[in-house]
Length: 322
Image (cartoon, rainbow, N blue to C red; front, side, top):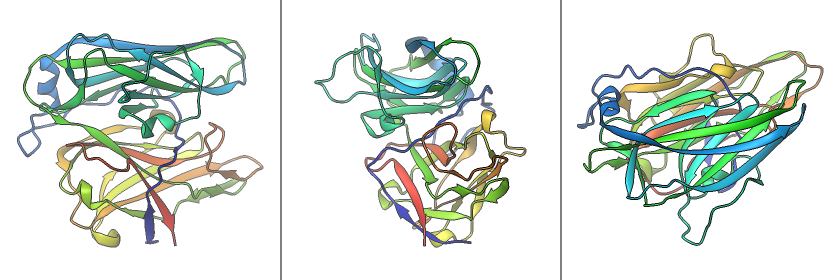
């Protein structure tokens, strides 16, 4: 194992890609009194919908647009399910709740990729064409009346025709007024990526310590993320310094365009003083070295993990190998 230290950065991370699979919700009842997700689906109201559209994107063009839109909810709500849909050429979508009361609605504007996970209250990061996140019963995202939402869409048109690029998020509020525990997520990853030309590379196992403020939270889902050359994404929980690791995410025949969103039954818990170990692998067929970067033509190794109850603090854990 290659031990490393955790770096907690208040800067933007840059993740992106898309795929077309829908996750399974075949969970049985987790512990700590939270009911399974399939039960939660019966306690949801009609969706509240927000969307962003970038018309007439030319072949070969890559960019990121953000937009602030009102959700249109009359009352405070607690979101128990999120269904995201991304059109062709969409690369990722970040959906956040704006917490600054001075902010207002806006038309789509140019922005930097993945700043949205570090502002406001992020609800989801989506890289799939069709993606459903279903919280366990008793878990959700609380939103204020007439909530202002922040949408960030990264896109790249790799085709030969001009296309409109769109992304839509349907937010399903719980119809029950019962109290819920607030869901959130942590992003785990590394910026240390250098894949030689015409080579395979497997990143040495890296380790990040889970901050003490997040002790005893319940991790109920995770997904891995690479770009086009990714061949594997593996995530483990472990004791201090990576001891006694347990694999929680290692999809067989990993396909970067269809990275699985895996739900845990029961929820996973990090041992006291422990953290996460992770590893990605790539196959670079090009004549040039490929490194970490925000472009879809560069590479990444990230995981986002959904958990509850929400804890304040850094949402991003980066591993810097010694």
